[in-house]
Image 1 (cartoon, rainbow, N blue to C red):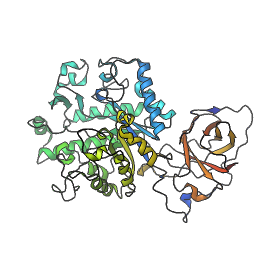
Image 2: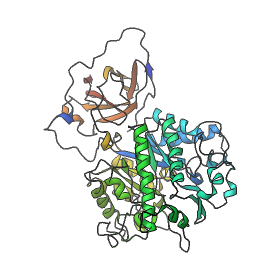
Image 3: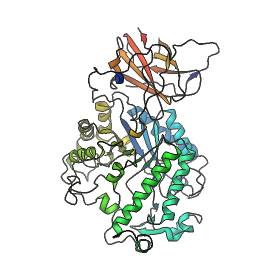
Image 4: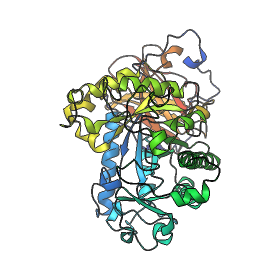
Length: 524
């Protein structure tokens, strides 16, 4: 289904315009009734549909170093437009890949992945541009930060002289062919939080996002040399492993508190390697036989972060097929569903698009329907509230047409971004539809907002007459649009047939809490 959105279209009324007011009788919304059928899991109203857009080593964006500002902007807009066309509603954009920045940070230099020269001004503010353009398309923007990785090699002299790692070489540990900040140093933890919080304060991001890198993945024959740091700072711990986990716990909990204090509506999520612990290691672990366990090897107690509700969402990277013996998708998703159950933490699943049609992978990844099967499986676990695809370049490649199949099977209707559990509350007042009329392009709706809390709007098209149960799920949702300033906004539904429809609209606040339905408008 393709909708033509009038992004930012505002009609400034030169004369008094009469529209239905919020005080007019509003139809009951499905959430306020008790006799509606259960929502259809095939058409969820709220579902995260996102992709990672990675900048490290120019995986996705920018596609290479040294592009002009206009070329970089054009590339990002193409990623965004393709995301909208696919039916996605969010993007996760990497803006601090290697202790350098995609914004003019007072703490760190401009990223090397922009110009090819660390510290070189790219001629615009990439983070500001990325956030603004995402919001124009009503895509939620998650800023993706790597906390401790400094560089993809061990040549510290390649960093600009003012780089914090050059200024504080005692913060740096070489390991596995890369450089890392030492997570056990209190000053490193504080610096990392300060660097991220600079972006939180200055930019209108919707979320802060971490991936799976904390302490580095184990490298055979190498030791992460933080023994001196442990000797100085680990006196309260019986072993270095517990101390390392405490260091990462402290980063997560402190950053969470800082984000919520600064911008309560901004969410914080983590996408870890999907195996917390194997059940052979810990009876409470997952029924897997993974060679890496985040608790033991990366010192990331991801289950604890969920239980403590330090994070708002978790995206385990379940990068294996259904039936894979060592780590079965069909066993890990239920395990993670149990972890989040009863908490305010949303569960999304990280999907391995990069494995599709890879000659090194087994037969399931050569099945065009494998990815779609993952989403079908998720529907039997209501705790799963969406998916993130790795990465944008693989989504675009669409090998075996696997994402076309996902769109056909699962993204036939739009979906709203889920509301974080801690942010759930009453929605804004509903908008007032000023007109609904057929045009050569489709049915055009115009409306006025009635509540300053309205951040976006949802448009529903109901065949025939509207009933309160029509909004119980997303089957009648035809589009969403970002709120703008001005007297009126417009939206064109270019998929409407020559039938009798009833349109209703709702308003959503920044956290996606939805209003009651507007007064209906009938179009014949």
